[in-house]
Length: 317
Picture 1 (tube, rainbow, N blue to C red):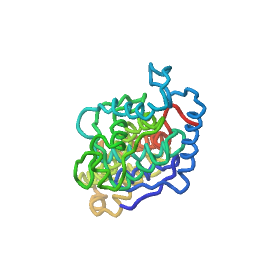
Picture 2 (cartoon, rainbow, N blue to C red; picture 1 turned 180 degrees about the vertical axis):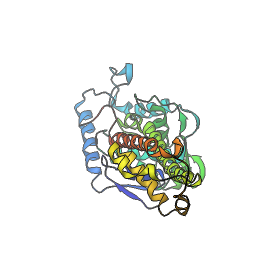
Picture 3 (cartoon, helix red, strand yellow; picture 1 turned 60 degrees about the horizontal axis):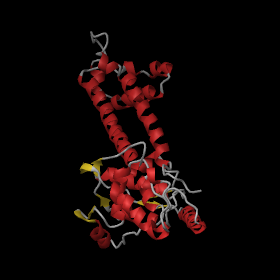
């Protein structure tokens, strides 16, 4: 599958679907400009010596504790390693690719204070198909997918495991084989990599895309079932569904008519059929599947917004 070029904050649902299917990802030209500005803002904060949460303070209950400049790198490394505590089987590779792309889009919008090198490494890992091994359980959810994202961040500093070219390798070895160098995290970077909803959103997107495939299969199966039962396409008459006005219902009826168009089976019993109507499950397909289609679209709209958003904390302006 060919690579796609994405503009952070403006990635359509179709591009997320392509990434789920294995497309490579490259950032659009100019995407790094805001990243550089954000990193420079962090440098100015440090130069002024003012305490700012997540940059030169502790976390959570230790937010009021000031961290010395020579311990900032250790602080960021420690928050990554302390949270890389997920459990369960490894998450599927398509979900991990989505999670990486979602984090890339978030960081590249220049509100997280990370350096360009951090964004570039994540982009390169996606492009070269390095897939971190990330347990499927351990997310906090609304407060941030801390554990799964910590496992991703850990591989970027050479800790943990990565699947590369079909082998499950130590992260440092995988990066080396791919010609990449592990990061030493700068101020704010560990927290920026951990904070976010990218793991939850990746799983939700993957679920949506799987549901879309099942939906298409169900429509075809419904048309075939109607044919097998020697049913009528009269319940799919567009006039019925136009009056009901639900978009999904109208479109499902149209799809069923198209699938059954020109059917010799249907034509063979159009006359002299003693049945008054088909079973409920056949003739009400547009109403049932149309409602499902409307819900899939609503989920897609919500997830597209979430996928393009920045869920870091604190934000750097």
